[in-house]
Image 1 (cartoon, rainbow, N blue to C red):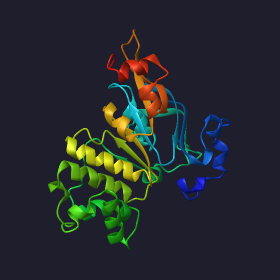
Image 2: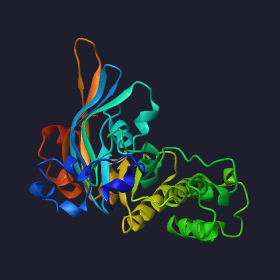
Image 3: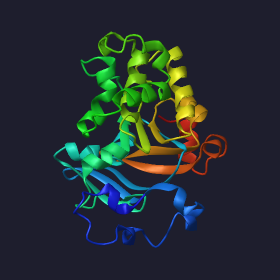
Image 4: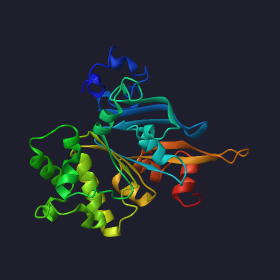
Length: 291
């Protein structure tokens, strides 16, 4: 992928690779070409309130990274930063560096719409459009101007989302009539249809029953062969089951204003974080003594 591809056609006037920091992922134990995101000193503000501070993470290609921590610690805020969803909040702003394939995502020359095509999002609650199953999946490619081959895109996306066999004979029926688990898989299919590299999932199983949750977890394991996945979850068992790496966020409280700011406490392999964490705060959280 060329850095220019993520920007608008006439927006890049210099080599965006110059934006890569001197400290590369390879210096920190990663293979540079496998790094999808490099966040350094990342903070997110709403107005003058710093909601989360000083996030440093390297996200590896074709891995599942879980973000865990107590409510209000900034997990979802950080997740939305990875595809500039926070841009839709007028008071939100990001400070620090967030690179996607070596490109500064928040460079003013970068098109946020293109960012969201390459970095898809699946939300906490299934959100099918009041359209047919077919039209839900075809929506993104149509908006991008695609007119030919939509049948193939819809079939391929539904197969990747493990939904094709269940709906292939009723593609023109309303998506609203599907079960909650089916609707969430439809949301995943809709995100896949735009041909992203990354899938962001914000508590995708919180509204589902255990059977539907297990199916989504199985699906994530299958999808990571093709996609890089970041998931926010309150379910530590889920993080332990599905992720390769886990980031634990906590909260610090300003005693004067009682404002709560999230911070990244520890980020490592999932096996290490759950079996031998480096930080006492992490151990207290995963053993139930905090949060």
